[in-house]
Length: 422
Ligand code: AMP
Ligand code: MG
Image (cartoon, rainbow, N blue to C red; front, side, top):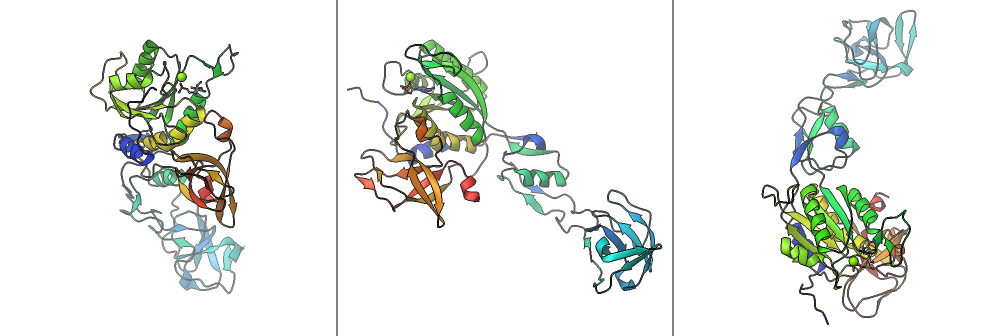
């Protein structure tokens, strides 16, 4: 029997090893429109007060509270975006819109619904307390100059980008999105849309992995299908090492005659692990290789490139991606939390245990009485993509004899964190 030269490492050890080999990419000044989902690289403080002037928070009439309830003479208009050359003297009022600066002399705003305007007079409705500050957002009420408003490590969503814009920033220093090169290996692989010849199948791994890269926050780079020939593999690898920050390949890492990838990776760089104790995904291989220049020569000026050689079976490729490649991409992108979110799930049925390896069983999840209930997506054959399509999570089953009984609790890794927002 052929023996793998690689020791089998645990999932936790594999994760620790790979995270020790990847670091956040440098920060780049990024226009706000390109920064969604990126991670901020520096703390940001407000340079000025917000609002930068006392502003009306309603449409209405600005006046002096001390004048009491009686009518005032309407002497002008103060619109948002302008500064009217107008002062509010005792007994007068100025029409004002939301967001407009409060003119000198005024100290309150009565909303338009609570006053009548008649013959050049403004008459506040009786019964409302006209006090200084009414209807006014003081300078610095939202943000004070010098206040920290965004923190390094924070992911930039719509609100954070808006915050940056409100401070007047058009660009933010953010970690670069890693470019992730993806190629499939296998003489049997055909492009979808083409007819299949005898012995051929469609390449499903590339669409899976390119989509998963984008979902993880990487920038996917499609490097195509590569045949199981040493020259072709070397060429694809060299091209990937020149163009991408991280490489993901699939196939060619099992124990067959044409599984050429592991020796190639070992020859060109360092294989950190070549087998992981998990089901599916045992042949997962992780290496670091020197970066290359466009002409194929080693580029000593660039950091080494992490390379993940995923098993060829589509489900194995997807599961190992989510467990290992996703954290690497997220670490490079600057995220602090890199793993899939984990919850406890109640088993909605018995789950058989594997005596040799922990299993990441694809499950649907349902909410019942505040708990997640996990059910199997059916046959877990690593070729059967139906076990993954529609799956909400990966149920983490320990290696063992017999079954985990219905009603027991096990951790589940969420493939879509929309669950956490429910
Ligand atoms: P390998 O790891 O290359 O031995 O491949 C293991 C199994 O996965 C074989 O049945 C392959 O045909 C299949 N496979 C490999 N790559 C792909 C791919 N890109 N798309 C679909 N199936 C694949
Ligand atoms: Mg193959």
